[in-house]
Image (cartoon, rainbow, N blue to C red; front, side, top):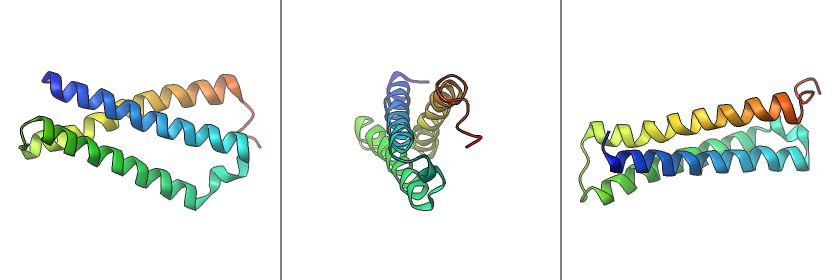
Length: 105
């Protein structure tokens, strides 16, 4: 993996994780019943897609305006993988140590 791809993957993966964590913590603080909100889920999904598409655009721009399909696909999927791993760590920590009874409520 070239350094530019690694930089894009980490930068946008962390950005997506921050957005998702802020959403989860905001709902936890405001009203836990909003976890099942369809509108909130759709908004987070759209925000996630925007971040990953933005990653592809940023890669293409920093790569001189060109990206092959493989590079564009990698610029989309690698931030997704980084965000999934970081999100999993957050969720395991949050639901096992911070509020382990949240799922039962």
